[in-house]
Image 1: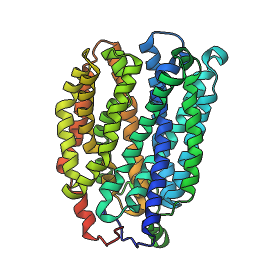
Image 2 (image 1 turned 135 degrees about the vertical axis):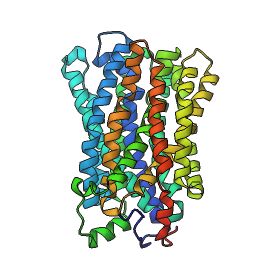
Image 3 (image 1 turned 180 degrees about the horizontal axis):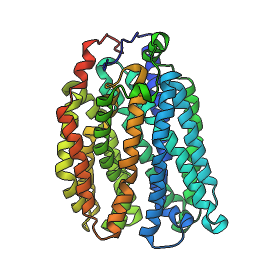
Image 4 (image 1 turned 90 degrees about the horizontal axis):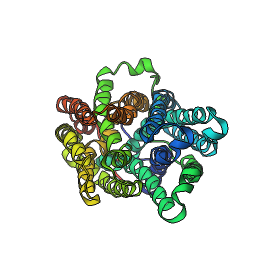
Length: 439
Protein backbone atom coordinates (compact mmCIF):
# COMPACT_ATOMS: atom_id res chain seq x y z
CA UNK A 1 0.00 0.00 0.00
CA UNK A 2 1.26 3.43 -0.91
CA UNK A 3 -0.27 5.64 1.76
CA UNK A 4 1.51 8.88 0.94
CA UNK A 5 0.38 11.60 -1.40
CA UNK A 6 1.62 10.72 -4.85
CA UNK A 7 4.17 12.89 -6.58
CA UNK A 8 2.62 16.09 -7.86
CA UNK A 9 3.76 18.36 -10.64
CA UNK A 10 3.14 22.04 -9.87
CA UNK A 11 1.41 22.70 -13.19
CA UNK A 12 -0.86 25.49 -11.93
CA UNK A 13 -0.08 28.97 -10.74
CA UNK A 14 -0.31 30.27 -7.19
CA UNK A 15 -3.44 32.27 -8.03
CA UNK A 16 -5.14 29.38 -9.82
CA UNK A 17 -4.42 27.02 -6.94
CA UNK A 18 -6.00 29.42 -4.49
CA UNK A 19 -9.01 29.87 -6.78
CA UNK A 20 -9.47 26.10 -6.94
CA UNK A 21 -9.28 25.79 -3.15
CA UNK A 22 -11.72 28.69 -2.80
CA UNK A 23 -14.18 27.19 -5.32
CA UNK A 24 -14.04 23.79 -3.68
CA UNK A 25 -14.56 25.37 -0.27
CA UNK A 26 -17.46 27.59 -1.37
CA UNK A 27 -19.22 24.61 -2.92
CA UNK A 28 -18.73 22.71 0.30
CA UNK A 29 -20.15 25.68 2.21
CA UNK A 30 -23.32 25.71 0.10
CA UNK A 31 -23.76 21.96 0.46
CA UNK A 32 -23.63 22.12 4.23
CA UNK A 33 -25.74 25.28 4.40
CA UNK A 34 -28.46 23.38 2.57
CA UNK A 35 -27.94 20.40 4.88
CA UNK A 36 -27.92 22.51 8.06
CA UNK A 37 -31.03 24.60 7.47
CA UNK A 38 -33.13 21.49 8.02
CA UNK A 39 -31.84 21.20 11.59
CA UNK A 40 -31.84 24.96 12.22
CA UNK A 41 -35.48 25.43 11.19
CA UNK A 42 -36.86 22.09 12.43
CA UNK A 43 -38.43 23.76 15.47
CA UNK A 44 -40.58 25.80 13.06
CA UNK A 45 -41.56 23.37 10.31
CA UNK A 46 -42.03 20.24 12.47
CA UNK A 47 -45.71 21.10 13.19
CA UNK A 48 -46.31 21.68 9.46
CA UNK A 49 -45.28 18.17 8.44
CA UNK A 50 -46.11 16.37 11.72
CA UNK A 51 -49.01 18.29 13.30
CA UNK A 52 -49.94 15.80 16.03
CA UNK A 53 -48.21 15.32 19.40
CA UNK A 54 -46.16 17.48 21.77
CA UNK A 55 -42.93 19.26 20.87
CA UNK A 56 -40.67 16.33 21.74
CA UNK A 57 -42.79 13.96 19.60
CA UNK A 58 -42.68 16.37 16.65
CA UNK A 59 -38.91 16.73 17.00
CA UNK A 60 -38.59 12.96 17.15
CA UNK A 61 -40.39 12.72 13.79
CA UNK A 62 -38.18 15.34 12.15
CA UNK A 63 -35.09 13.70 13.70
CA UNK A 64 -36.20 10.36 12.26
CA UNK A 65 -36.38 11.91 8.79
CA UNK A 66 -32.99 13.48 9.45
CA UNK A 67 -31.60 10.05 10.35
CA UNK A 68 -33.16 8.35 7.31
CA UNK A 69 -31.42 10.90 5.11
CA UNK A 70 -28.16 9.57 6.52
CA UNK A 71 -28.96 6.09 5.25
CA UNK A 72 -28.41 7.38 1.72
CA UNK A 73 -25.04 8.89 2.56
CA UNK A 74 -23.16 5.58 2.08
CA UNK A 75 -24.76 5.20 -1.36
CA UNK A 76 -23.57 8.68 -2.27
CA UNK A 77 -20.13 8.01 -0.79
CA UNK A 78 -19.87 4.85 -2.88
CA UNK A 79 -21.20 6.06 -6.23
CA UNK A 80 -19.91 9.64 -6.18
CA UNK A 81 -16.61 8.52 -4.61
CA UNK A 82 -16.16 6.00 -7.43
CA UNK A 83 -17.05 8.71 -9.93
CA UNK A 84 -14.44 11.04 -8.40
CA UNK A 85 -11.75 8.36 -8.68
CA UNK A 86 -12.70 7.35 -12.23
CA UNK A 87 -13.80 10.58 -13.91
CA UNK A 88 -12.28 13.23 -11.66
CA UNK A 89 -12.93 15.06 -8.41
CA UNK A 90 -14.48 17.98 -10.29
CA UNK A 91 -17.25 15.92 -11.92
CA UNK A 92 -18.33 14.38 -8.62
CA UNK A 93 -18.32 17.75 -6.85
CA UNK A 94 -20.52 19.38 -9.50
CA UNK A 95 -23.02 16.51 -9.38
CA UNK A 96 -23.20 16.50 -5.58
CA UNK A 97 -24.06 20.20 -5.30
CA UNK A 98 -26.66 19.85 -8.07
CA UNK A 99 -28.45 17.08 -6.16
CA UNK A 100 -28.33 19.11 -2.95
CA UNK A 101 -29.93 22.05 -4.74
CA UNK A 102 -32.76 19.85 -6.00
CA UNK A 103 -33.51 18.52 -2.52
CA UNK A 104 -33.66 22.01 -1.01
CA UNK A 105 -36.09 23.26 -3.63
CA UNK A 106 -38.36 20.23 -3.11
CA UNK A 107 -38.60 21.02 0.61
CA UNK A 108 -39.22 24.70 -0.12
CA UNK A 109 -42.14 23.92 -2.43
CA UNK A 110 -43.84 21.03 -0.58
CA UNK A 111 -47.25 21.91 0.91
CA UNK A 112 -47.93 21.00 4.54
CA UNK A 113 -49.78 18.04 6.03
CA UNK A 114 -52.99 20.05 6.23
CA UNK A 115 -52.99 20.45 2.43
CA UNK A 116 -51.75 17.14 1.01
CA UNK A 117 -51.84 14.82 4.03
CA UNK A 118 -49.30 12.01 4.13
CA UNK A 119 -47.63 13.18 0.92
CA UNK A 120 -46.08 16.06 2.86
CA UNK A 121 -43.82 13.95 5.13
CA UNK A 122 -43.23 11.55 2.21
CA UNK A 123 -41.85 14.35 0.01
CA UNK A 124 -39.83 15.66 2.93
CA UNK A 125 -38.35 12.20 3.34
CA UNK A 126 -37.55 11.94 -0.40
CA UNK A 127 -35.82 15.31 -0.40
CA UNK A 128 -33.69 14.34 2.58
CA UNK A 129 -32.76 11.06 0.88
CA UNK A 130 -31.61 13.02 -2.16
CA UNK A 131 -29.64 15.40 0.04
CA UNK A 132 -28.18 12.49 1.99
CA UNK A 133 -26.92 10.96 -1.26
CA UNK A 134 -25.41 14.30 -2.20
CA UNK A 135 -23.67 15.01 1.11
CA UNK A 136 -22.37 11.43 1.24
CA UNK A 137 -20.51 11.99 -2.01
CA UNK A 138 -19.47 15.53 -1.11
CA UNK A 139 -17.31 14.68 1.88
CA UNK A 140 -14.92 12.21 0.25
CA UNK A 141 -14.65 14.16 -2.98
CA UNK A 142 -14.08 17.55 -1.33
CA UNK A 143 -11.66 16.16 1.27
CA UNK A 144 -9.67 14.54 -1.51
CA UNK A 145 -9.76 17.61 -3.74
CA UNK A 146 -8.66 20.07 -1.05
CA UNK A 147 -5.94 17.72 0.20
CA UNK A 148 -4.51 17.12 -3.27
CA UNK A 149 -4.78 20.76 -4.33
CA UNK A 150 -3.04 22.12 -1.21
CA UNK A 151 0.71 22.67 -0.99
CA UNK A 152 2.53 19.79 0.69
CA UNK A 153 3.85 21.70 3.72
CA UNK A 154 0.44 23.24 4.54
CA UNK A 155 -1.95 20.38 3.83
CA UNK A 156 -3.27 20.45 7.38
CA UNK A 157 -3.98 24.17 7.15
CA UNK A 158 -5.73 24.11 3.77
CA UNK A 159 -7.61 20.88 4.44
CA UNK A 160 -9.02 22.38 7.62
CA UNK A 161 -11.06 24.70 5.42
CA UNK A 162 -13.35 21.77 4.70
CA UNK A 163 -14.70 21.94 8.24
CA UNK A 164 -14.34 25.71 8.26
CA UNK A 165 -16.87 25.83 5.42
CA UNK A 166 -19.01 23.07 6.94
CA UNK A 167 -19.34 25.11 10.13
CA UNK A 168 -19.77 28.33 8.16
CA UNK A 169 -22.69 26.71 6.35
CA UNK A 170 -24.28 25.88 9.71
CA UNK A 171 -23.51 29.34 11.01
CA UNK A 172 -25.08 31.06 8.02
CA UNK A 173 -28.17 28.92 8.54
CA UNK A 174 -28.41 30.20 12.12
CA UNK A 175 -27.69 33.80 11.06
CA UNK A 176 -30.50 33.61 8.53
CA UNK A 177 -32.76 32.21 11.23
CA UNK A 178 -31.84 35.07 13.59
CA UNK A 179 -32.47 37.68 10.89
CA UNK A 180 -35.88 36.21 10.19
CA UNK A 181 -36.64 35.97 13.93
CA UNK A 182 -35.46 39.44 14.92
CA UNK A 183 -35.97 41.68 11.91
CA UNK A 184 -38.25 40.39 9.23
CA UNK A 185 -40.89 37.94 10.45
CA UNK A 186 -43.05 37.26 13.46
CA UNK A 187 -43.06 33.89 15.19
CA UNK A 188 -46.44 33.12 13.60
CA UNK A 189 -45.10 33.91 10.12
CA UNK A 190 -42.01 31.77 10.68
CA UNK A 191 -44.12 28.80 11.71
CA UNK A 192 -46.59 29.31 8.88
CA UNK A 193 -44.35 29.93 5.84
CA UNK A 194 -41.14 31.74 6.77
CA UNK A 195 -39.23 28.51 7.28
CA UNK A 196 -39.40 27.96 3.50
CA UNK A 197 -37.17 30.98 2.79
CA UNK A 198 -33.81 29.34 3.70
CA UNK A 199 -34.50 26.37 1.45
CA UNK A 200 -35.11 28.73 -1.47
CA UNK A 201 -31.93 30.65 -0.62
CA UNK A 202 -29.98 27.38 -0.43
CA UNK A 203 -31.19 26.31 -3.86
CA UNK A 204 -30.17 29.64 -5.41
CA UNK A 205 -26.73 29.60 -3.75
CA UNK A 206 -26.15 26.14 -5.16
CA UNK A 207 -26.46 27.54 -8.68
CA UNK A 208 -23.51 29.87 -7.91
CA UNK A 209 -21.53 26.95 -6.50
CA UNK A 210 -22.17 24.92 -9.65
CA UNK A 211 -20.72 27.77 -11.72
CA UNK A 212 -17.61 28.06 -9.55
CA UNK A 213 -16.99 24.33 -9.56
CA UNK A 214 -17.41 24.25 -13.30
CA UNK A 215 -14.31 26.46 -13.60
CA UNK A 216 -12.12 24.48 -11.18
CA UNK A 217 -9.05 22.65 -12.41
CA UNK A 218 -8.61 18.93 -11.84
CA UNK A 219 -5.87 17.94 -9.38
CA UNK A 220 -2.46 16.90 -10.72
CA UNK A 221 -2.57 13.76 -8.59
CA UNK A 222 -5.74 12.55 -10.30
CA UNK A 223 -4.52 13.55 -13.77
CA UNK A 224 -1.33 11.51 -13.33
CA UNK A 225 -2.96 8.35 -11.98
CA UNK A 226 -5.79 8.55 -14.50
CA UNK A 227 -3.21 8.56 -17.29
CA UNK A 228 -0.95 5.76 -16.06
CA UNK A 229 -2.84 3.69 -13.47
CA UNK A 230 -4.43 0.34 -14.28
CA UNK A 231 -6.35 0.20 -10.99
CA UNK A 232 -10.14 0.47 -10.83
CA UNK A 233 -12.08 2.48 -8.26
CA UNK A 234 -14.63 0.01 -6.90
CA UNK A 235 -15.51 -1.70 -3.64
CA UNK A 236 -13.45 -4.77 -4.54
CA UNK A 237 -10.36 -2.60 -4.87
CA UNK A 238 -11.22 -0.72 -1.67
CA UNK A 239 -11.39 -3.97 0.33
CA UNK A 240 -7.66 -4.42 -0.30
CA UNK A 241 -7.15 -1.75 2.40
CA UNK A 242 -8.92 -3.18 5.50
CA UNK A 243 -6.66 -1.47 8.05
CA UNK A 244 -7.22 1.92 6.46
CA UNK A 245 -10.97 1.34 6.29
CA UNK A 246 -11.12 0.43 9.99
CA UNK A 247 -9.08 3.51 10.88
CA UNK A 248 -11.53 5.76 9.03
CA UNK A 249 -14.51 4.06 10.72
CA UNK A 250 -13.07 4.23 14.23
CA UNK A 251 -11.92 7.84 13.98
CA UNK A 252 -15.22 8.89 12.46
CA UNK A 253 -17.33 7.13 15.10
CA UNK A 254 -16.10 9.31 17.94
CA UNK A 255 -15.71 12.44 15.87
CA UNK A 256 -19.10 12.41 14.19
CA UNK A 257 -21.12 11.65 17.35
CA UNK A 258 -19.34 14.47 19.17
CA UNK A 259 -19.72 16.84 16.25
CA UNK A 260 -23.45 16.24 15.69
CA UNK A 261 -24.14 16.37 19.41
CA UNK A 262 -22.59 19.80 19.85
CA UNK A 263 -23.63 21.36 16.56
CA UNK A 264 -26.79 19.93 15.01
CA UNK A 265 -28.51 18.78 18.23
CA UNK A 266 -27.37 21.52 20.59
CA UNK A 267 -29.95 24.13 19.54
CA UNK A 268 -32.78 21.71 20.38
CA UNK A 269 -31.00 20.62 23.57
CA UNK A 270 -30.80 24.19 24.84
CA UNK A 271 -34.52 24.70 24.19
CA UNK A 272 -35.93 21.31 25.06
CA UNK A 273 -33.67 20.45 28.03
CA UNK A 274 -31.99 23.56 29.43
CA UNK A 275 -35.07 25.73 28.99
CA UNK A 276 -33.77 28.59 26.86
CA UNK A 277 -36.09 30.32 24.45
CA UNK A 278 -35.68 29.55 20.76
CA UNK A 279 -34.19 33.00 20.17
CA UNK A 280 -31.63 32.71 23.00
CA UNK A 281 -30.65 29.19 21.95
CA UNK A 282 -30.06 30.41 18.41
CA UNK A 283 -27.81 33.24 19.63
CA UNK A 284 -25.78 30.88 21.85
CA UNK A 285 -25.29 28.42 19.01
CA UNK A 286 -24.35 31.14 16.53
CA UNK A 287 -21.65 32.64 18.77
CA UNK A 288 -20.22 29.23 19.70
CA UNK A 289 -20.15 28.07 16.07
CA UNK A 290 -18.40 31.30 15.04
CA UNK A 291 -15.60 30.54 17.50
CA UNK A 292 -15.53 26.91 16.36
CA UNK A 293 -15.24 27.96 12.71
CA UNK A 294 -12.43 30.45 13.32
CA UNK A 295 -10.22 28.00 15.20
CA UNK A 296 -10.34 25.31 12.47
CA UNK A 297 -7.48 26.83 10.38
CA UNK A 298 -5.51 27.49 13.58
CA UNK A 299 -5.73 23.86 14.65
CA UNK A 300 -5.04 22.73 11.08
CA UNK A 301 -1.89 24.86 10.95
CA UNK A 302 -0.76 23.50 14.32
CA UNK A 303 -1.11 19.98 12.94
CA UNK A 304 1.40 20.82 10.18
CA UNK A 305 3.98 21.28 12.96
CA UNK A 306 3.03 18.83 15.73
CA UNK A 307 1.40 16.12 13.60
CA UNK A 308 -2.13 14.88 12.97
CA UNK A 309 -1.86 12.02 15.47
CA UNK A 310 -1.18 14.40 18.36
CA UNK A 311 -4.36 16.34 17.55
CA UNK A 312 -6.46 13.18 17.36
CA UNK A 313 -5.12 11.85 20.66
CA UNK A 314 -5.89 15.17 22.36
CA UNK A 315 -9.43 15.06 20.99
CA UNK A 316 -10.00 11.43 22.00
CA UNK A 317 -8.70 11.86 25.53
CA UNK A 318 -10.58 15.09 26.26
CA UNK A 319 -13.84 13.99 24.62
CA UNK A 320 -13.78 10.70 26.56
CA UNK A 321 -13.19 12.44 29.89
CA UNK A 322 -15.25 15.61 29.59
CA UNK A 323 -18.24 15.09 27.25
CA UNK A 324 -20.64 13.69 29.83
CA UNK A 325 -19.77 16.34 32.48
CA UNK A 326 -20.14 19.18 29.93
CA UNK A 327 -23.56 17.90 28.81
CA UNK A 328 -24.59 17.57 32.45
CA UNK A 329 -23.57 21.17 33.12
CA UNK A 330 -25.36 22.43 30.01
CA UNK A 331 -28.56 20.67 31.06
CA UNK A 332 -28.87 22.83 34.19
CA UNK A 333 -30.74 26.18 34.15
CA UNK A 334 -28.15 28.94 33.77
CA UNK A 335 -27.27 32.23 32.13
CA UNK A 336 -26.50 32.67 28.44
CA UNK A 337 -22.87 33.48 29.30
CA UNK A 338 -22.42 30.32 31.36
CA UNK A 339 -23.95 28.08 28.71
CA UNK A 340 -21.78 29.70 26.06
CA UNK A 341 -18.58 28.98 28.01
CA UNK A 342 -19.40 25.30 28.44
CA UNK A 343 -20.51 25.00 24.83
CA UNK A 344 -17.29 26.55 23.50
CA UNK A 345 -15.21 24.24 25.70
CA UNK A 346 -16.86 21.26 24.01
CA UNK A 347 -16.24 22.68 20.53
CA UNK A 348 -12.56 23.36 21.28
CA UNK A 349 -12.20 19.69 22.16
CA UNK A 350 -13.93 18.60 18.96
CA UNK A 351 -11.60 20.82 16.91
CA UNK A 352 -8.80 18.35 17.56
CA UNK A 353 -10.74 15.99 15.28
CA UNK A 354 -12.59 18.26 12.88
CA UNK A 355 -9.57 20.33 11.81
CA UNK A 356 -7.47 17.35 10.70
CA UNK A 357 -9.83 14.49 9.95
CA UNK A 358 -10.04 15.15 6.19
CA UNK A 359 -6.27 15.19 5.64
CA UNK A 360 -5.72 12.21 7.97
CA UNK A 361 -8.15 10.06 6.01
CA UNK A 362 -6.87 11.25 2.63
CA UNK A 363 -3.28 10.42 3.65
CA UNK A 364 -4.32 6.82 4.34
CA UNK A 365 -5.15 5.90 0.73
CA UNK A 366 -3.34 5.96 -2.63
CA UNK A 367 -4.72 8.37 -5.20
CA UNK A 368 -6.58 5.86 -7.39
CA UNK A 369 -8.93 4.87 -4.55
CA UNK A 370 -8.69 7.98 -2.35
CA UNK A 371 -12.13 9.59 -2.81
CA UNK A 372 -13.91 6.25 -2.43
CA UNK A 373 -11.63 5.20 0.44
CA UNK A 374 -12.33 8.41 2.34
CA UNK A 375 -15.98 8.86 1.40
CA UNK A 376 -17.60 5.43 1.63
CA UNK A 377 -16.48 4.17 5.09
CA UNK A 378 -16.93 7.70 6.42
CA UNK A 379 -20.50 7.87 5.09
CA UNK A 380 -21.40 4.45 6.50
CA UNK A 381 -20.10 5.43 9.93
CA UNK A 382 -21.80 8.83 9.92
CA UNK A 383 -25.07 7.14 8.96
CA UNK A 384 -24.78 4.72 11.88
CA UNK A 385 -23.47 7.13 14.52
CA UNK A 386 -23.89 10.77 13.46
CA UNK A 387 -27.29 10.44 11.82
CA UNK A 388 -28.78 8.68 14.84
CA UNK A 389 -27.18 10.86 17.54
CA UNK A 390 -29.99 13.40 17.74
CA UNK A 391 -32.71 10.76 17.63
CA UNK A 392 -31.00 8.70 20.35
CA UNK A 393 -30.61 11.77 22.57
CA UNK A 394 -34.28 12.70 22.19
CA UNK A 395 -35.40 9.09 22.73
CA UNK A 396 -33.36 8.77 25.93
CA UNK A 397 -34.87 12.04 27.14
CA UNK A 398 -38.34 10.78 26.26
CA UNK A 399 -37.89 7.63 28.38
CA UNK A 400 -36.44 9.59 31.30
CA UNK A 401 -32.69 8.91 31.02
CA UNK A 402 -31.17 11.91 29.20
CA UNK A 403 -27.86 11.61 31.11
CA UNK A 404 -27.12 8.24 29.45
CA UNK A 405 -26.49 9.99 26.15
CA UNK A 406 -23.36 11.76 27.45
CA UNK A 407 -21.79 8.43 28.40
CA UNK A 408 -22.63 7.06 24.95
CA UNK A 409 -20.79 9.96 23.29
CA UNK A 410 -17.81 9.45 25.60
CA UNK A 411 -17.69 5.74 24.73
CA UNK A 412 -17.57 6.53 21.01
CA UNK A 413 -14.77 9.03 21.63
CA UNK A 414 -12.86 6.35 23.54
CA UNK A 415 -12.86 4.18 20.40
CA UNK A 416 -11.30 7.02 18.44
CA UNK A 417 -8.72 7.48 21.18
CA UNK A 418 -7.66 3.83 21.07
CA UNK A 419 -7.14 3.94 17.30
CA UNK A 420 -5.29 7.26 17.50
CA UNK A 421 -2.89 5.82 20.08
CA UNK A 422 -2.11 2.78 17.90
CA UNK A 423 -1.95 4.39 14.44
CA UNK A 424 1.19 5.69 12.74
CA UNK A 425 1.70 9.40 12.14
CA UNK A 426 0.29 10.05 8.63
CA UNK A 427 2.67 12.98 8.07
CA UNK A 428 5.72 10.72 8.42
CA UNK A 429 4.50 8.56 5.54
CA UNK A 430 3.62 11.61 3.49
CA UNK A 431 7.07 13.17 3.93
CA UNK A 432 8.92 10.13 2.63
CA UNK A 433 8.36 11.06 -0.99
CA UNK A 434 7.43 14.70 -0.72
CA UNK A 435 8.37 17.02 -3.54
CA UNK A 436 8.45 20.78 -3.35
CA UNK A 437 5.03 21.69 -4.63
CA UNK A 438 4.68 24.67 -2.31
CA UNK A 439 2.72 27.72 -3.25
